Image 1 (tube, rainbow, N blue to C red):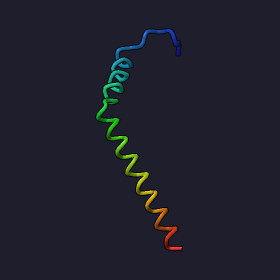
Image 2 (cartoon, helix red, strand yellow):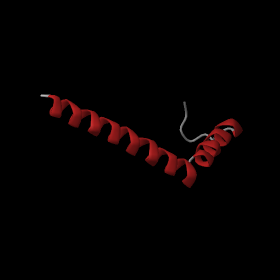
Image 3 (cartoon, rainbow, N blue to C red):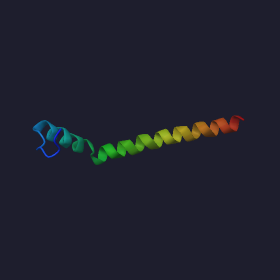
Length: 52
């Protein structure tokens, strides 16, 4: 692997598609999902502590 070779067309295409994926909409969905997971974990921990 030489690092200073020009990237092939396929590599450029995959890199561009990754940037296309990171749209603001996707970031909003990631934030929503992560906050939901955190809420569920927090509620479960509170439930465990109450039952003691």
